[in-house]
Image (cartoon, rainbow, N blue to C red; front, side, top):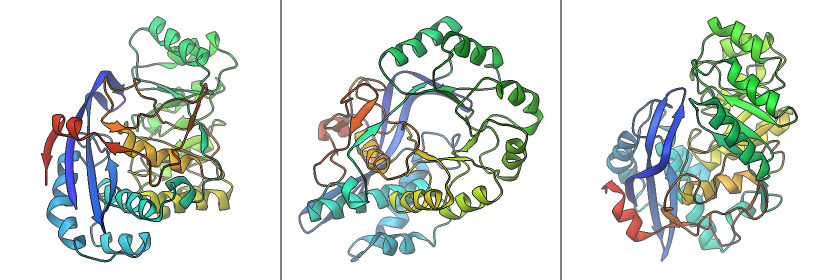
Length: 360
């Protein structure tokens, strides 16, 4: 088992409610067995702002504690792997990197595409457009127009306290029929209820993660005051958290990210829970390379996915993609999961070395 911490420079700053990033720090895990190799990736970023984890800490946990636990062991199933990782509290991204590598390795050894192995219905998936916070309203409207003209079925707007209702009103006025939602990245509190009531009349598809990342109860209170569905992202860190959120009506939509929930194994279980409870769900991402996004594409093939995924084509985020083959649109707003064994993507050795922060 090998661990790599890399920093991938973004083409332009990614601005959200929790801050501004100029590069994405991500951690990759390589597992090898009987001549085959699998890769997994999780991107908790350089600092603990999206969640309590960060790439440097994730790397240390994997290298110092998880690797000695797993090297030389026969891990027969993803449930077996999750059980071995369970003594470590939290640290979902670190666990996810190993879990994804296990799935990639096992499906490569079996000679089957990852999306088929996890029960995907079809390799073709829908993807949407994401727009980070914009200071200039004219540029925002131009970016929304470009996304819609390119055929993306929905647009997500990053939204923070200084964005203001007027920004969303301008988008709705210019594009009255567009499917639009906002992503608050846990930047608000219940004191902002008047703001959310104003947004409630703008026909948004959902309001994503409006309140604190560790909260469920206040989200339920907010949902009771709104018609617009509340979607939980950062708050959904496990199957049990998803169950509790659904039971108290804190989440009428669930965003599933394999990194945030500890890997594909848990992501698949959350998807099954949502189907059983008739809760719409969709697949998010953490701006990973094609290794991490390849696993997201596999998740997006599952039955019941109700909304276009956050998966980005080559050239959208980075000047040069760390992993190959590159992820591309196969039609407007559409992508196709790889039919190659495993997740279908591998880091390019020269780029991995060039972007490396540390390895072990």
